[in-house]
Image (cartoon, rainbow, N blue to C red; front, side, top):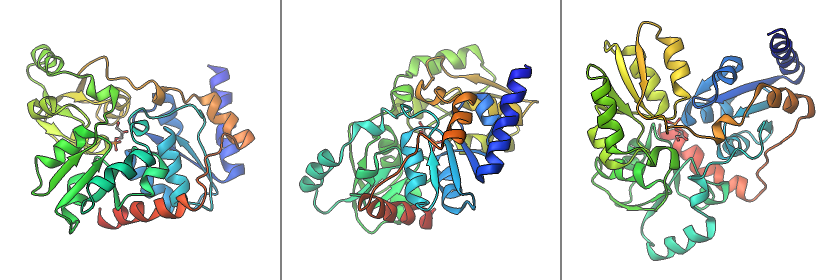
Length: 303
Ligand code: 13P
């Protein structure tokens, strides 16, 4: 206990010394969320990174998130406390594979989910997050969209837009492994609860849910709704914030398998070490950085 208090104090001290801001994704552990200056979804954190007055951004999340911050705030030092915290979904697309697919769909606009490598963003027309994907797609002139790399989010958008969506065969293993049976079992266990799921879930899971939101959308819904019991179909890290902000409501994980091991690699010790050593540092080199900035900024301008 004393040790933890001293650790938290040291982080606070270092943060001040370095003029650093700590950003944490909604899936981080409770103790990381509690020391962060901002906790949010991918879109909210990108916007904060692009506008922050800090010299240093400690990104408690996964590689593509820290890369996005480095692209949008190239004059800042971006630290990722655990360098091996990757995103298997982002790894399901490469610049080379995208180039090949683009050659087969020449008229299509390339819409790339923020969960992707910088080199892939660099070849894209515009980026999206789960909170703005439909709005961004509908804002484009092109009638044909190559949607990269999440096929479940792509299908969710395809079901609501008039545009033709060409899917990429990528998925988030954490969300994709949730089944319709899991959802039905959760409904049976909590028959008076409503179900909200993330659009990275399979189409049949999305169809059977009452609501579909990004993690930021879930936070807002939970705050505004009069429902008192909610089944949560996304990574279980979100429950920390939901419970903290809504003590009068009850939240149930849709499945215990909704666990992202990469998001749980960040610890308080690693945050302290990152601030002390200013490592591991995430940089995106030119020309990729400039090329990847355009689709991200286009997205920020739309949504
Ligand atoms: P959000 O943008 O909803 O936070 O989702 C990010 C993510 O990586 C989901 O797996």
